[in-house]
Amino acid sequence: MYSNLCSTTEQFNEEITAQTERAAAFLLDVQNARKEYFTHSVAGKLASQYKETFDYFSSGDVSGISQSTTNSINVYRGLTKFRSDWNKEFIQRELLEAEELLSDIDGKSLDAQQRVAVITDEDSNLVLAGAGSGKTLTIAGKVKYLVEHKGVKPEEILLISYTKKSALD
Image (cartoon, rainbow, N blue to C red):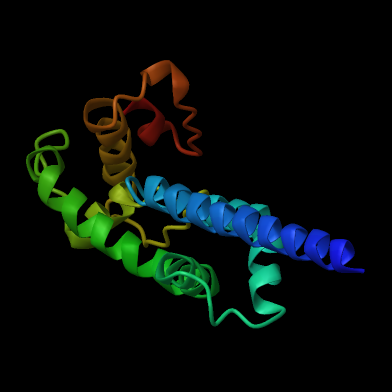
């Protein structure tokens, strides 16, 4: 009986160690994702990839876990809000870094909303704008930003236009 208890205790300790290591890996993955715009799909992938770990910690007493693991749990639980906040910070930093580029798109300067649309790098972006509001200029700005600031090769960009004018610009 004693050996079974020891074996169970050892297994329990091994499981806690493994899950604690996974929680630390989650924080590293989040930190890497924060270096750029933190997309919805990356957040979803991380949430799914580490779900079992954080389910493990939410299923019992976690009073003895480290502060680092507690931080991981809090980030996991609040990932949507944290991602939103981090992306706002990223956009502010990126707007400053790309100021000169965004001020000269074919001799024109983008307004604040256009700049945010260019910097935002979500999986999909919907920009609603009326006639003459600068949609084509914004698209040109996005391409220039990707090529000159992010190092994307022009041949890696697929741009579809529904008007002859914007296709020629």
